[in-house]
Image (cartoon, rainbow, N blue to C red; front, side, top):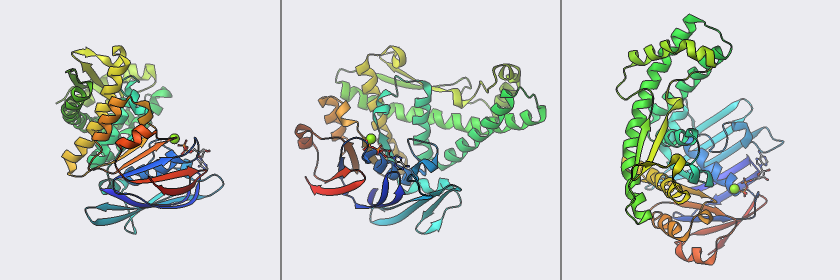
Length: 362
Ligand SMILES: Nc1ncnc2c1ncn2[C@@H]1O[C@H](COP(=O)(O)OP(=O)(O)O)[C@@H](O)[C@H]1O
Ligand SMILES: [Mg+2]
């Protein structure tokens, strides 16, 4: 799958923009704060219906305007699909080939996207939230049911937490919430277990390749609610935790508290790995996403590299570039040095100056 083109209107700092892309490589350079990440963000939204930078859709609307519009044409082996997303203060409308979607989850299968930013190089080192986000983003794309289960889980969790924060022991409501959380939660946990097994397999191969010294990367899913726990057993755990949850003012148990355990040669590297190990493991995890999407859907994802190449040493850069063959890649950077450019395949280059984009040949 590739992006053929994008058109933007009142999107972030773009008033209007219309670009045709290369099917392999698109390099986007420009000084800071000119609109490079904004452009990648517009592509990401086409795949997932929401941003990788913010949960507030209205942030995408160009200051001083009341709507934003982004339209892209995606090509899947010669079959074209047009995706359009319009945001205004009331919400957002997603259209595929001119028809408004009833469920946002229906957007996801049109194009698969892997985004890689400097933050992602810290997935291993940072707190559990960034690792949960990593799992969720990937699973939402390949499993539409997961997307709706997670959305529903989060909605109920918010309501339950609100009650707990108010120290309101409304038993009837808690009963309903516990029931729903147990239902969505068991499915979410099972999917995350399966995801972890598959991503672990792919990433350990990549990790030992990059590290070049036979380092053994192991990844496991860490949860208080073990695999195979039934919905009824899960609910019972929630029922039992009501008193302590009320005391703490939030829901202490569930997939929103889970984590990925990451080990190299048997040692947990989340807190104690060297910076190099943590970075290589993060890179391996990100690259494994592309492999997993291919395995699960048979499709090539589009890779968005936001300002990340310059953060990698030459060996890791080379590995990353090697993994880019066969897929469409967008690279942003303030500049691309000559040595790096020589490693990159042919493609289109764009230069952005204050939301004005010009294309030039490499
Ligand atoms: N909703 C918005 N309306 C107008 N400008 C915006 C909006 N959101 C962000 N910007 C502007 O976009 C610029 C940052 O763009 P970004 O793509 O992140 O830069 P970079 O080229 O460094 O990646 C900033 O100047 C910021 O003020
Ligand atoms: Mg940027």
